[in-house]
Figure 1 (cartoon, rainbow, N blue to C red):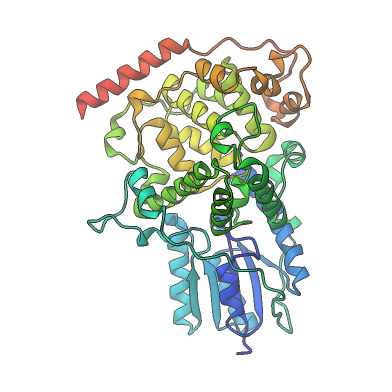
Figure 2 (cartoon, rainbow, N blue to C red):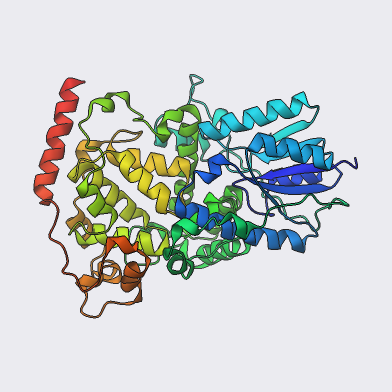
Length: 471
């Protein structure tokens, strides 16, 4: 076969264990890797768009090392792929599946149009351990609760990762591509881009290096340290997984090997990988998870729309130190510790009675590791409207949580300049990264708490009890 195959890359920006890349190479002809900046990707938040550019830069360099190149194109996905087929004479298009409803609709339209043209369209699994429709309950349905889902997949076979190709066959003539810099993907980050860039790594090489370091040094103590806000106990792989710079199969088999070698904490880490799988399982089967209450009865809950308290929350100025520390960590690094994510989500939706979608939208805008399934399920879990939720027992008290998981106040003082007589670089960086119109300064007095924690808890419980009675 001498006609080229178009490899449509999306959230699989890697060469190792990339089934779509392998399928394209197995066609036997030249492979043209393409990334399309279509309206769906244009709609991402500021931080993930900025992070995308860095990932694409790294992928372009990796492809060049294999004798290939990346062809970036901007425009409607279907129109762009049709033009590329006409320009290159490609008779095959391959991509890794996505599972959110808008992406599925787009991909279905592209596949239908390609087939109508006589072009083979092939989609493969490059993002999950198990396709959502392959994991079924005894009754043939999908799982709605995490623990039974985990039991169902825990011992299921996971294919070994594919090796990166030695070379990628190139066409004699390449189609033109856009210059990534012309897309200005990081423009919306404004002055925050330089702050986050100093604390972020991107690309497949960085992902594999981080994974190796975690499995060597962090996996053994993961179960004991992962909730400590003041200790480096997590893997740091979330952004790499979100952009597909490392595959879940590579992570899974690495963690299994660490567990077999005696790293007991790796079992808890494996369970977190399954939690990610469960989020995609639900997003596929119940697409409304992304933007509507997963439990319909929560449509009657009296959450507030966006409000002044939520704006104080976004700016890390609630007067609740651990909440503000987490929100400032987010602005400086583009990330947030997972325990802190639960705390800020609980505080916004329960103590401040603000709709979870307000918080989900802010995370979608500011997280470099934004993932449509994990972000939506995390917020609905914390709010009580989602799966595995038990709202009457899950109103986190930020003060007691801080004492437990930040016992020496290291996390709070690291990120909140006003709490330290000599604030460090990270705490001061928050004021360098925030929008100028916020007019924030470390010299300003630290704000008083927005709400008494006991009062906020009692108000939330009263609202939940009313909802329960109504239901």
